[in-house]
Length: 132
Image: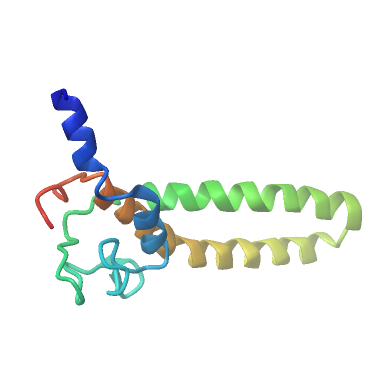
């Protein structure tokens, strides 16, 4: 067995997708029970259930970019379809899509931050490799 094989096997003990899903649910990526966030976007320093340190995260602007990407890709085609098929009044259409954009963005932003923290935890990024 080579050193790289051993290193790859060591990283596989933290499956990525379950950690991302737990993070999306705003739960600890380790145990899935403790709260990941307090407030709206502030990550807890550690999990209240399992004690996993969470202050290592470096989510920064990633969740905001992902939110813009997802909201844009969902609402741009909806805007086009509604205009072509229904032809609503411009003010009605602007109001509908403004409310939809804000609501979807506010819903997705903390969940995507949790998913990014879960991904970082699973991949042992930014100091998560030392915390067990």
